[in-house]
Length: 372
Ligand code: PLP
Image 1 (tube, protein in one colour):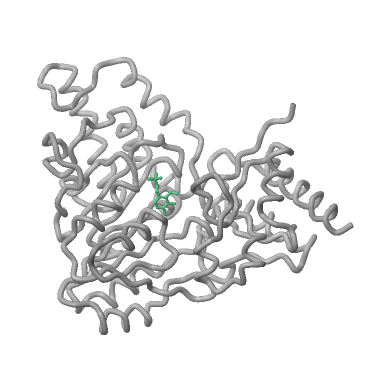
Image 2 (cartoon, protein in one colour):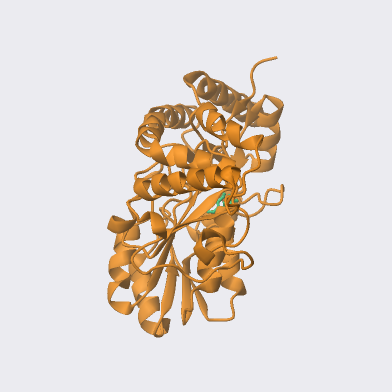
């Protein structure tokens, strides 16, 4: 049986052996960081170490890092708990931003994106002028999970500067792939997650800038300095800290994957020059490719690759296990017929040249079969 090949790192990634080692000691011991006995104090020390590591990795103050159980939770906290007059979110945000914004009882607006998948800053400026009110909230992601397109967050920040905007950035797909600096991004709040870059699921972080924290979403115990109630997941937080400590190395490792990604795209374009790679003219994450197999629906491709032992995902949002319409490609103005043929290939720490060879060979097999 040949090895199964995992190329869906933007959904989640396999746990890095080093992160696993950091977690192991915490899995067999009682670890409630609020307890005053020795076990509790040891857990507290591990969390505070991780808080400093995460803060340093994004150039924030440790006191401004709040650990959550997921990035989804962190996004909910910002959107639901910031007292805003209106909310402006880009049309390509993750569902944990988009759906929450739509459910709020204050006016909400979608910031359009260009055909290359970048937030249209001029359109945002215009929206803020017309509908901003006295305390608007703007949420723009650092890099898109489907196309990998890196967003002009600094330009967004400049457009927000004079308007007392609360600016949030979902940096989930950027962490460990790009260097992330909360000060140079100039945002008020940053969402991070560990599991897209070799960490465990079940931990995220909300990092605040100079504005200080927003009120808690979850209330109960006084954990996280009253900013997020609930017993902390020490094992996962410690592993998150390890990733943050090594963020520089992870970014370099991720940059190296760009060569594999580019090779894959070139070979696919050689096989099928009419194949389309979305966001190709924009700056993208080094690990992500969203590409069409002309005339072959994503559902068919997914089944074919899965049967051949290769795990990828549809370019379209696939949150319920079904291949749905991609709001990201729709926002970029891609006709639905073409978008339905889009596949997302996302590489990560375990990806090798051989994996990419097998993907390209498998891609060609299906393409030729459908042509004949
Ligand atoms: N934000 C982005 C950009 C994502 O890609 C994801 C997950 O795919 C999330 C937020 C939510 O992360 P989680 O499911 O870990 O809460």
